[in-house]
Each structure stands twice: as C-alpha cells, then as structure tokens.
Image (cartoon, rainbow, N blue to C red):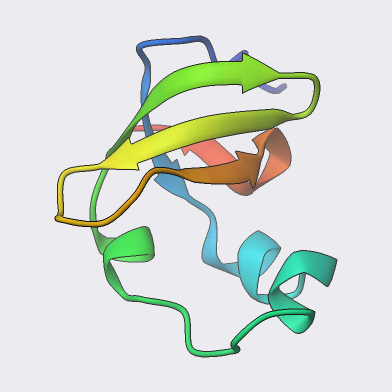
Length: 71
C-alpha cells in the first residue's frame, strides 16, 4: 500500500530508487549524503515529481514521487 505524498509533508529519499534511476545515471554518480540522511519538505508537486527542500544550504531538488517516502 502506498501513502500519498502531499505539499508540506516531510519525506525521506529511498536510496535504491535514486541510485538506480535514469536521472542518476545521466548525472554525476556522487550523490550527496544529505539526500539519504535527512528529511526534506515537499514544496510543490507536478505530475510524478515533487520539489523537495532539504534543510542544508543547497537548492531545492525535483525528485520522482516513487523515490520518496513519508518521514
């Protein structure tokens, strides 16, 4: 059973879904550890993607909804 993710939710990134994704293979393979070790807040949702803000001094990032789980 999947839990719907909505704006304002705190989420965690699912490492296996990000590391094996097409997006990760097309980018730098060195993913920052804060993606997996901290929670982020969903700022916006567009189709199958969520804009997630992490509480570190970095820009927000778009991730697929299947790469996230509620924290």
